[in-house]
Image (cartoon, rainbow, N blue to C red; front, side):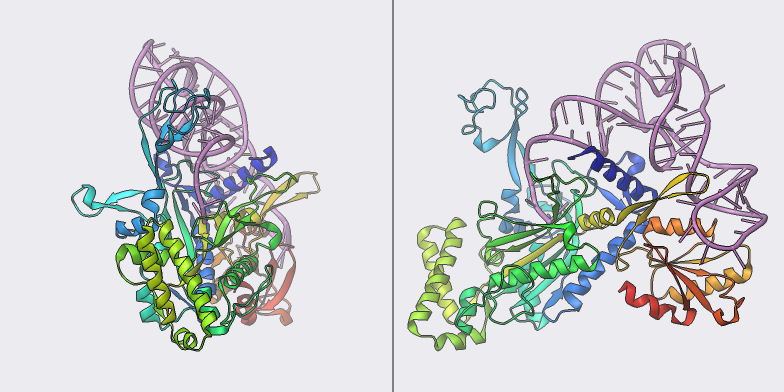
Length: 539
RNA sequence: GCGGGCGUAGCUCAAUGGUAGAGCGCUAGUCUUCCAAACUAGUUACGAGGGUUCGAUUCCCUUCGCCCGCUCCA
């Protein structure tokens, strides 16, 4: 943590989350378990709202994205193909003398921190035996616990989408470009869970794999690939978009989503990965960061932010891997491409053929295929392109739900101070959630508890609203106390039933007060208009 | 996993080798005509296990968890 003040801010948030029932430590009564967190009543509502908004925006509101709900345990072959079995398991050696940690396969290359003239292998430090640091949780499928039964809890939801790509394509009546969206749990046995729920061992993802034509196919069909500005939203998708346009599009779509739930651009930061940071198969990756209180600061003292979501342009790597490992074709056939290819001038088709060939060959060689075999396969692939066949490329917006929840809470957290006549200052916490994500949409409160007519009317209003939104009825303590309770829960609106609602002023019969969380403003609304007044604000 | 700090009600904080206390919160009741009013009653803790001791929340060990460094990127 950069600064004690920010530490305090984070501690307040943690304390509030427990006090109000947003987040609890998992297995707390048994002393807890590191890296696992539960959501209490308010947290469960908040999280559900966020996931539903994502699902709504990503699938139901779109023509070109469909959903998937895959299992958490899959064939271990999937994780071989994806690279997780290999890259997620570096054997490590700790040196008890110098406290260093080294990859076991590099101890004869890395110099000893204390005696740089010698490598780690030859220095005098006492080393532990090599230990595999596999970030995947292992389990066994079936009753026999031998190596043949080993399976893994998925470390990301994405791979199921690739593995089911063909099934979805064939059953959904979609054509490239289109996407497959999925939310769900993922598991990583992190070395060090950190920063409250930010890095957990069990967490939930919201991932879209959006499949697009390779640029060579777009160019063959449209003559050229559209260029779009590198900043700002490029507008409605166009058929001549290549991967860059689609990537830019999804970055901006995702920012719109965050803005729509109360995280405006100033709370976010962006990181465009450098060529050194990118995985070898990736063309680009933009991270969307949120400036958490625990974030580190840059040289200018600005919060750098922590990653909420990465939008990666992953080329055709994923589907190609699964095609190679499963032996099942992952390519698609494109009528339009086939028709267009025949009309290309030879110069053009040769150029496209060569570029596609080069890309395929580079991928195959990077994947360890022998040069000769790679050249042969790449030739086949490029010939396939000329007949209308290709392996789709993918743009992957991949977000962490739990990180977003924490960001929403941190963003909403605010304190207001009031000093009463006696000079007593009181600090109140207000969670300024966007109404769309707020766990409770409306608090229904009779002005007084000991007047049966008020209570009866308030209960009637509660029952009127309940089918439409999450309501909370409260008649405990004074009205001010109840407002304060709802402020802490982040409830955007409170409806108060008073004597005018009962007709004390006849013209106000069957009206109620709506009190706004953020400024305390009140307005009078007829009970019969309540649903129509509230719904547009919470959707 | 390694090193450093920490662990007392739901929260914030006391005290002690000999019965653990306050404020706030929460629950119930009285009262209350719009922003944590008052009164009454109730509620809950020494992270877990072992040891030293007549007796441990206090001293020692182990373990679990939290925070800070090394790792990581949803």
